[in-house]
Structure formats: C-alpha cells, structure tokens
Image (cartoon, rainbow, N blue to C red):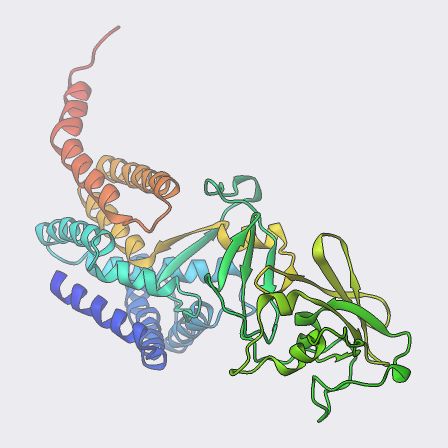
Length: 427
C-alpha cells in the first residue's frame, strides 16, 4: 500500500509540474464527490441502523446527494462559501476515509501507520522526495491553486507569525524605459542604499500623462528657437529620450565639437550613447496638452499630469539608466511574505483519525492518551515549523508518540490502574 501511495504521489507531482490541471482537478472532484456521496452514505447507513433513525429512501438519497454536491462545491469552488463550511467538509472527508481504513486488521493498521510516518519523513525532507517537489512547485509565483489537499486555518490577529531575521521593508525603484544603449557593467537587478533597482525592457513606450501618442516625427528632430514657448524643461538627455521630447537646439560653440549634433547622431548600433551623453542635461520642449517634469532634490525628477498630480518619480544612475521609484506598502509586503495562517495536509488528518480509532477499539484510556499525544506532536511540529521556516512532515512526531504511548498505556499504565482499583490504598 505504501508503494501505491508513493506512485500516486509521484503521478500527482508530474501532472502538476506539466500543468495537466484539468485532468488533475477533474480526478480530485470525482474522487471527493464519490467519497462524500457513496462512502459517506455507507457511514450514514451504519448510523441509521445503529441508532434506529426513522428515514425513507427518498430522503436518504436526497440528503446524500446534496451532501456530496455541496461538499464538492465548498472544497473546490470556494467562492462565496464561508471558510468554516469548507473546513467542516474537509474534516468530514478525513473522518469518512479514516472510518474506511479502520476496517483493516489491527496489526496491518499499526504497521501501515508506522510505515507512512517513515515515508512522510523521506518524502518531505529528502531532496528527491515527491512531497518536497510538490511543495516547491506550489510555492512558485505562477503556480495554480490545487484545492482539496490542504486544511488551512487562520490565526487570530494577536497571534500573528513573527518576522524572519534581517528582513526590512524596502522602497523599490522600477526601471523605466530609458531607451539607453549604454553598456551595463552590472546585473539588471541591484541594490543601492537599501533600495532595490530592477531594470525593465527598454523597448516599451513611455509618454507623459495626458499626452497624445507620438507622431511620425523623429524623436531627434529639432525646432526653431522662435517656436519654443514657456513649456520647456532642463532634464538629462536620457529622460528626454525616454519621453520622446523635442530638444531645443543650442548655438554652436565654434570649437568644431557640437555636443547637440553628437547627441542627435548617437543612439544606434554604429554610434551608441555613452553614460556621459545620457546624463548630460538638455533643454526639451514639453507637449502643450500634456504633463510636465519638475526637478526635485537628490537627483529626482517628478512627472506630473495636467492637474499637477505626481504620477511617478524618476531617478537616473551613473550609467545613464532611468528608474522609476515605487513605494511599497509595508503591510502589504508583510502580508505577502508572512501568511497569517497555518496549513496541514489532509492526509495527516486522516491518519491521525485512524490512529485514534484503533486506540479507541481497546479502551477509553488508550483513546485519551493517543489523542493528547497527537495534539502534543502537532504542537511540536508547529514549533519546529516556526524555527526552521520550511515545510515539515506532520506525521512522524505525532504517529511515533501515539504508537509509543498506546503501547505504554496498554502494557503498563492500565494494568497499574487496575491493580490500584483492586487493592485500595488508605492514606
């Protein structure tokens, strides 16, 4: 049976890796609906016979049909469904499957539990473990959701999970399209003065707010000085090139080196722009019906719309690359990095229930002992989870504690209690 479970796990990992989600979700919906409707109906039938509940066949099938349908919707659709209903159906699924597994022979069940705990330990912690691979795939940014496998519970606000060490909120600057052909001596992503800089593709178009799209006029065309009005601004050539602003020509210096001509002729593969050319400040004409650019402190340039509202703040580094400064809300970043919930695999619930059911078959004392140590093992797993901050198997500690205390209670504690009851001690 362990081999079958391992093969099924590897199959789920392969289907999830290659995004066969329709087949995978369809199989899970079918299995969950059959589990709730058919196996749940068998459990309900046993309860009817045991407690002699008066019910007709029509009501029986009507209840089980709705129970299975609503449960499937609550587990896999979840939109508009309260969380406690989804949690209740996940627990019901675990109880029904545990009830089916409890029909095995006693030694078969105990051997299965120990082997599953060892398998869970290897599947989660070893590099080639299928559950470790599945957790890694589900933590990717573009990973699709796969409901029905995890039980999730929200923590109260006062029990918010702690932060990781050396993690601070950062304001991010996203690189704008600088249309720069300057050489990049470093990586596209860098960190400077506690600020993360990420450069984007330089082929995307950029316009001032409320500006009309650029016409067929070349970005390096000039106008006569008489056409220049009050809507001019002095900005680095890289920012002017970014927004395709028309540059005001400067009078020649007479030394034979016209900087303006060199800037206009640069920018292609044969004559690429240098960082010094991109940083050089030029006078550019702003669009009449568009926004404007204002120079701020610390080398920042604010881009404003027609109403004077700041749309973005630009920053140019020494390499002539233009970045957009984006402020990130600390609370939103913390919410993304530190989820205020705990997740437990649904299989862990199932085998916890199987162990408790086997202990309850012997006596009430073994039932209570196993239930308490399972909760203690789960608590210890959560403590280790907060320490190591990685996915950990939830079965080994609880199962090994449960098996150990079952044997201790059955062989030592109960006989000792019975001896005390047979021979009372007077104090």
